[in-house]
Image 1: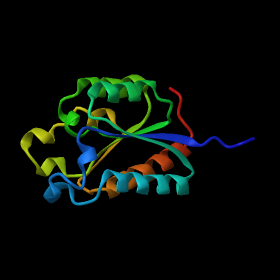
Image 2: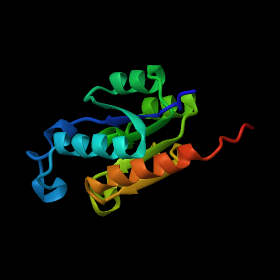
Image 3: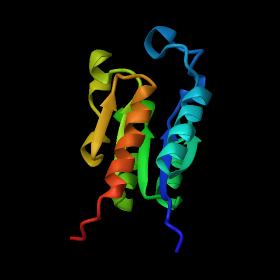
Image 4: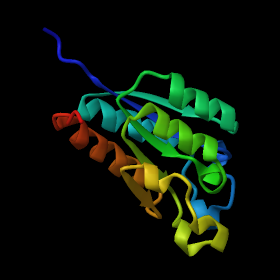
Length: 152
């Protein structure tokens, strides 16, 4: 019997395709392509199946969350962190564990960024560690997926 690969969905929110070009003093010079390459390499080493998407559209993100087949979600909702009840509700609706990731420390930026509509429905939040935050989230996902699920 072949062992099932745990499936992880990574969603990058709006404007993250501009990494390496935008606000380098906040986000650094690494690109989304570099982050994705590092994630793919780490996922292969961990034995995880990985799907990565980036969207600037709230509706597309909600569709991905609610219509994709996966066992764990890693999401950087970007600006939608502070505004999207729809993304929050989608995460609640699928009942799949999620980790929220932010490249910058949202608590050290503008006051409006300190409020996340996603954090309380995620099992964890990684903020302010740059691109390594995604790798840490993937490692955490791997460990969490190894544990037997508790049916309630």
